[in-house]
Length: 380
Ligand code: SF4
Image (cartoon, rainbow, N blue to C red; front, side):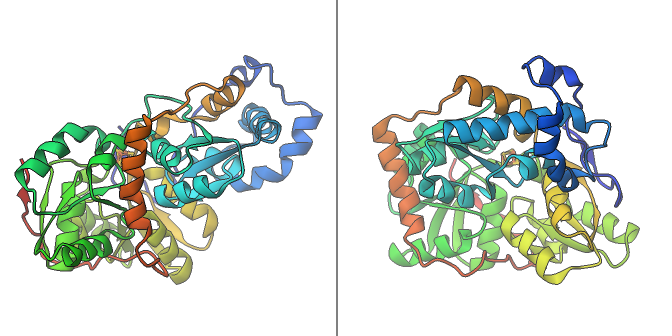
């Protein structure tokens, strides 16, 4: 995984290098029709794709956009997709919950999940009548892989009196065993809600130990957790934040709550990808660092041309398995359909519905920064 703690303001994450052969191997060429269809799109990625590379990318983009129309398909593009996918072929863009909501609402027959496997499962849970495709089945997640439904059944046996909240970054199997899901936008709201509903001072939040620690610091509720972590966010440290401040005086540092608590302690603002994106759009800081996955900075930068981005770079290798090529291929072949056994889907939907039934927040919750990190008990 790439890790560059300070790549400076002018060094965006490179889009995958490709020769024309990737398009040509699929019978796609950069002809006058493709040029006419795609010329207007180039400015959206001009900071990431050179004019020399464009003839290799444009035929894939045109091919995907034609196939979407022909097959009544939409592409859900997560904030961590590279800008070519995010800006050129994504129909809906955002965090995993925003995308799942779009999946449920769309009239399209086919949903292509430009994200990781648990996100495609969430789309299928909420949109069971639609065909959900994942372009590469290897697009997993270290958090989702850290826990199974069987693990949650054991936790329930051990702690029958505590509600179990699961972060949406988990498999359908895990969601099916938990009482309610949460996202990084609403985790504190969900934990406070279930503590009240169950009349308990203790809530179990799995599988992300850092999200759990950060939520516990916000709410004052006793939280037990599971030793899972996002392999991208766990690499950031409070020391990184201090070094960035020293190297870039005046910089505003925004962190995702999957980062360890000492990162949030040192950051200026913390919140979900949506909260971070809103912060930048609304405050237009002169110079920012987003402590999250690399492509997020690229995509937020494209929408905020007056903000300077210092780009610390932790790539998610799972997200980066999704490419224009495999999106094109899955639209052609209909391969890799995501399916979930109906009894699992129904129980997983109940956990998602419990969260969706909570009062809708006007905006994603920000996490307090400057809090002293807490140590939490583990359920194993
Ligand atoms: S960024 Fe982290 S949480 Fe998101 S898919 Fe990658 S490993 Fe999972």
